[in-house]
Length: 246
Image (cartoon, rainbow, N blue to C red):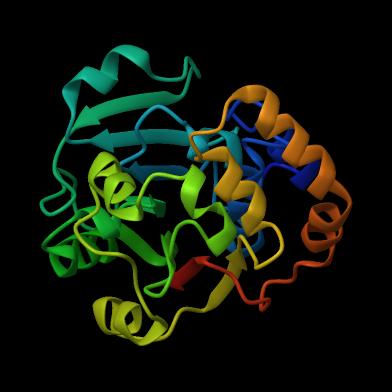
């Protein structure tokens, strides 16, 4: 039986540089995903990571499982994690090249907001996951904005620049919109990047130089640590992780 990685070791594998400052938002994302992901998979487990890019999140989450990473960008095949049981497939989330009921888990971490025909991608994920398996999704809330704090606006790119750079076709989702895509409410949900920790997110993607970012991180660290430690799955957040069971 393939088990989910312990939370501590999973968070310690944060691939984003400076995981407690510039990469704190990614650590928060990983914790939220860990909270909603199934604790164990049947047998060795087979996981499909749709739009996985280079992060290898699914391999970190389920280190004993067989992982298939699917991305539409073939060039990403040249820089994939080197796990023995990790494989790359070039393909389209709207038309997955797999049989029905092929995977224990399908992940779509920060993917749906990049796809015009998101309804097709959601239905394809449900098609290829086995009965009793899960589809895991993370996505921004529809009402998010960057920077979160108005005082940071002079030092940050406009959010439209980031959305274009990141390839967003929509800002994000409200819960009812995702429920409509997957045909029902999610079984589990956990938010991340709350109104306190959002300051570190603002600074991380600002135009400030490294020295000024480090100073702001140091000044805000006590309050940010408080916000991080007290964050619960239902805490107000700018992004959310979800789990749907088939």
